[in-house]
View 1 (cartoon, protein in one colour):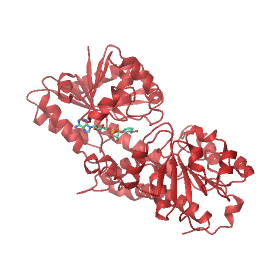
View 2 (view 1 turned 135 degrees about the horizontal axis):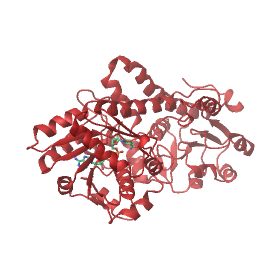
View 3 (view 1 turned 60 degrees about the vertical axis):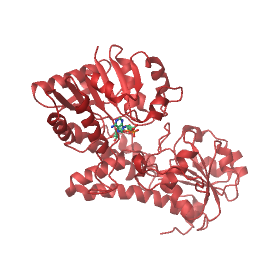
View 4 (view 1 turned 30 degrees about the vertical axis):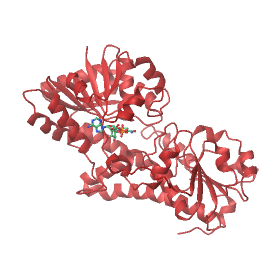
Amino acid sequence: MVKICCIGAGYVGGPTMAVIALKCPSVEVVVVDISVPRINAWNSDHLPIYEPGLDEVVQQCRGRNLFFSTNVEKHVSEADIIFVSVNTPTKTRGLGAGKAADLTYWESAARMIADVAKSDKIVVEKSTVPVKTAEAIEKILTHNSKGINYQILSNPEFLAEGTAIQDLLNPDRVLIGGRETPDGQKAIKALKDVYAQWVPEERIITTNLWSAELSKLAANAFLAQRISSATGADVSEVSYAIGKDSRIGPKFLNASVGFGGSCFQKDILNLVYICDEVACYWKQVIKVNDYQKSRFVNRVVSSMFNTVSGKKIAIFGFAFKKDTGDTRETPAIDVCKGLLGDKASLSIYDPQVTEDQIQRDLSMGKFDWDHPIHLQPVSPTSIKQVSVVWDPYQAARDAHGLCILTEWDEFKRLDYEKIYESMRKPAFVFDGRNVVDAEKLRELGFIVYSIGKPLDPWLKDMPALA
Ligand code: NAI
């Protein structure tokens, strides 16, 4: 029986391994992590991450050929194939701070593998890493090898949070990079055999190590660029027209208040760091994304008579996108901080994000979230201008304005007449994700701003702030 161990039970490691276990009943899969609460949650009825379809897959396999454990060293030493899916945040200090990837977690995982391994191993780079990381890891392992043969593969993950299970069950492609030596090719084949249990052969692409690493960074940079470059005109019309071109495709061309999540910004900053010559262009992509968020805040403040001080503003959605509870780098953080800076009082509703998480996100500095060591616990005097509620109607009651910051489907189905009645007048809706039907809301009496759409006639006369 092939034994797989995955180091890192996060947004990538958990779902990916669950799907491998589902599709390969003859493979034993153990997911290990140093975080005891995370592993306890994976072994409970309340999984640590929300992802549609994940509960069902875990229920089918857990205890059969899928296990979650904190006994990292035991399972690493017993495995034939070790996936490394630890976090690779942007460095917050030292050389390359704010740009380069922090490989501390990766390096310590690699050294631990070298310490405990007693038999040959295939080590699979699942985390998104700078180009040539595999080579560095290979050096760490072979210099400490005690005669063990290590083969390093790069197998970057292309899943998107919110659709992870679908993406894993039916991937556009699986990319496996490895050495061009006979041993390297043998390792590629071993991993290919795992995916081939459910992925058609023509979708499994094999390359050398560098190509696989670079493909992932470049793909994320292109996807992020598409989101942040959305400008005026009616963006859904434009994206439909452009998306008809099969070389471009319709996905990912929707306008929004800015991209978020743990990957896009981090991976672009990483590219910026490793290829300075074209860095200017990619830096602009990050800048445009930041601009989208501050422009949204400016729009809210200027529309509401240039002041939100003391006004209640309802925030619908805090996760970085729908169908996930993940808030890492969510645009909601910057928008909320911007509004709080102008002394608004916020009432936040998100179906999957807890109050504790929101308070922590709003009191943290940029990038701190992925460096658990620097994390401060939420202080008992958490931000007073913020209340978090579990009911959208309660969030909107007595509010002057309502900002939609995540595209949860349920926001389309709310009773906006009831919401309008309960709000202060004039009642504003700022739709950062193009979720609601602006015309219908205007008929109810709302003044509506939808991102990437023509301005509400009412708003045209308002002076925009800088
Ligand atoms: P995450 O932060 O959710 O999970 C990483 C886990 O690794 C944490 O639970 C942490 O406790 C654990 N860990 C760190 N060092 C460890 C060690 N030495 N031993 C055992 N466990 C250790 O991160 P996430 O989102 O799963 O990302 C992992 C990698 O995958 C990153 O490189 C990311 O860029 C990449 N990625 C993320 C995607 C996403 O949508 N979140 C999509 C594609 C790739």
